[in-house]
Image (cartoon, rainbow, N blue to C red; front, top):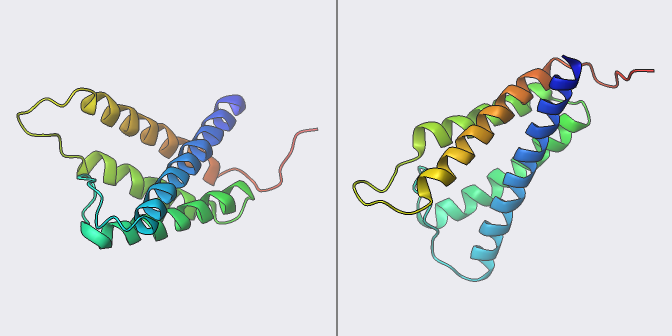
Length: 134
């Protein structure tokens, strides 16, 4: 059971770390390139507000991942993971009646990965900091 907990915690760190790095890269490149907007229908923001929400949100997410890996503020990492999961599950809007190839599959991968990462962040929250086996 300890191996499963450790694996789920590791996967949650990897998932959220990569997600934050990708969002940071997207938003910083869009801002640097002068793009007026991004199209991410699952998020409640639009225009330049979306760009800056992604930029600062990804930085905050990276900070929570780093703090959780170091054993500090793991409940904050769980709250971050829960917020991301809720945004993906509740906020994702499919393209109406038109079928966009790959959209459903991509959304399901993100949602399933986020739920697995949520479980891992829950388990990591209860792990003692600095506890190592001999």
